[in-house]
Length: 343
Ligand SMILES: [Fe+2]
Image (cartoon, rainbow, N blue to C red; front, side):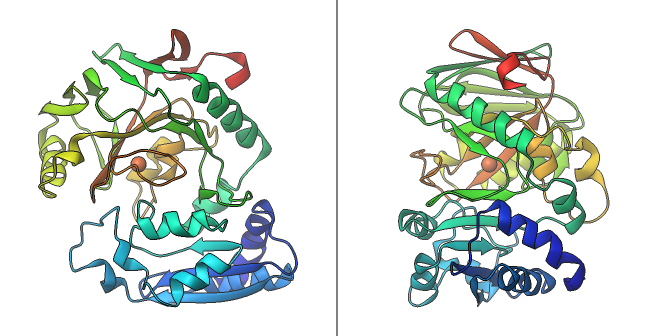
């Protein structure tokens, strides 16, 4: 497999603007597919970059199978952290979450760019960064950056408002090519961190909504009610509703019930059914699906997003067929992007 991956990973490193003489750090753990660091090592060498691997035991993230979104202790504080801060690009192939952590913020703050890679090779190849998605996500983020109020509605009963006053609009296109930038290959989405006490109203998770972290499709509608920024009730959904509540409750932290990020998918090549296929799908088809609403709950304090909610919980809802307005301008109608400039 390694030999097959080298040309693909070389293309991805080129999308990340890896230059001869730059330093690429490969971050992995003992559960990482060993072909991935090996292929990235070959790809980086072909581009004339310096490359090294940091490999940590996955047990550092604890003994629970529920992956924490905020595991500072994944990265040993002495040596590996400094090495990654000194690199130009960190390719993160670890199987434990450290996106929303202080150590990740420190690495980005040093000017290092980081790229998460944990999806199956078929998905990586199908969703290699492309110029259409780059343009679409950049345009969407620039539009969202200017907005202050989000209004979500749907035929199934969603009617939810959130403030994003003072918050960034961010883009993911699956490549980390700017100093201090994080991205996740593959990706195609626009997002913001809503103001933490601002969510008011009802969010419906209709049949077919994908719930990442527990990797489930919603079998019957779930009604989520928000007051003063917090999820105060959740009804319906059968076993999936039960599992969401169990996941969120397990942290014994009220910050798990605060929205983390809201945005929309821009990847026309994403496939909704991918998450239901046997084997790990990786979730990025669901997150990036064109016109889908990605609604995250919990941690959002990674500096790229600029949120203030510090918790170990994080769960994502991928919702189709919604309407979204930003300051009264309709962005999505029944899950389709409306403004010509954002299509
Ligand atoms: Fe998320």
